[in-house]
Length: 232
Image (cartoon, rainbow, N blue to C red; front, side, top):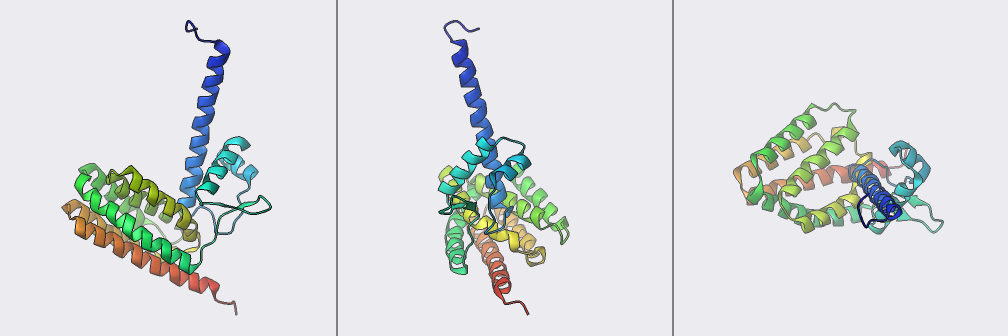
């Protein structure tokens, strides 16, 4: 026992730290799942089911859900049900415009800081993406997220990174409905990003990232339109 430290108070503090760590872990896991299309737009976030799948109690899940509602990643309805918000095409286009500005800037900044280890990581993720089969939609989007955020973290701009994360939280659920065969060009776009970063060419990195978001966005919009077509 440390002299001058109350045992009950110390144990209480330790439990508080453990709870905070668990809350943060659950929050990060749910956040990552949302950003990579782990939940379909319009689906309800059921606390008990989430707690069971994450092997935790209801409390950290409830805390994480509340944080994600504040971040606009989730939406609380008047009856207190929490759902994954759906996006219209106009909302998607607005988010894409802002993403191009922020993520293009992050790619350009990354050219100043990118290391051989980062390039190696991007190439490794790129190879994993190319090896995926057509029924690996969830894996594609998870790897796509990992690829992009490896670039953005290399920009060494915490504020810019947090803004990009906020946009991905809003757009991530859209990925849930996009078939993998609509994303085959994504690997080629990633190759151009890697090449620009390897050359330290900020202008080319911005252009490659912009092209990747534009082409990917066009495929998502096409899927949106197809999904809204009346069944015959």
